[in-house]
Image (cartoon, rainbow, N blue to C red):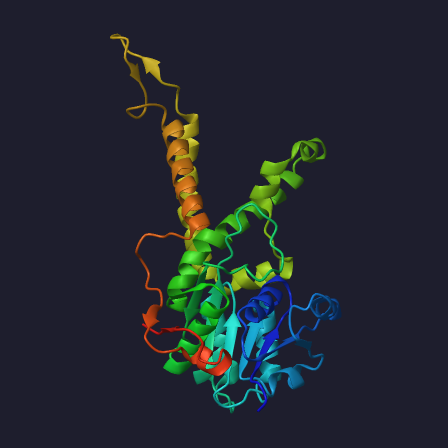
Length: 340
């Protein structure tokens, strides 16, 4: 009996790492990869990130039981159009994106009425937390990391369960969220920092002193302005989530005004009794704001490194029976996760 096929569309860092993680999990499936960029396919074949590279998109998708789209949001619409008639009934289409609501809308638009149908399509977002390090394809990239899983209004519960089991099989922790809620949060923790970093470069590069200033730009400048994405990908993601990003920008404008006021505030002085006084009890308001910000950032960094978060959003719960992914691709080895 032929093994079921898992097809990964997009063999960049994300797709290649998924292929390596699936092979590490000993999945009883054939891991097939496809990328429209010949160099990416060649690198995947050379580095054995998948078991087979398929050059033809339709041939890669037609026999697959699970199709993962690991590509920029700007390429999702065209890809779904191309594979619409290739998706088999009950095959899972798992679309990965850093903005989920636009991806969910594309699924409804492109797969609605197709033989595979939108009922077996799920969106997800793996959170990569390699703080300060270069992200390269590797099997443990997702280990213990949060992997958001979200469903559309028409998603079949079994598809959501299968997606969560898939996430667990690559070492990540499924986190179920509403796409709209996810996009509101990601506008703040990902897109706003990216936009501000690019705005900083844009401002400095247009200033008369940039010729000299760029020689002084070091590690701090590099870390705070690295967007990590191509211009086209960033544009598509930010335009797709612009309503949420505009809200975050308005919040930042108010925050920036406060920091400007704190910076302009006079230094603390001594009153007639010899006691130090300032705009706030305990010191200069800018110093207090810096201390608060650093403490919160350090707390987050420690939690991110340990993947030890306070109780909050629901993660997948232990299931007493093997999950669908294990039943289909891992030979019923081990337990699984069930949809909450």
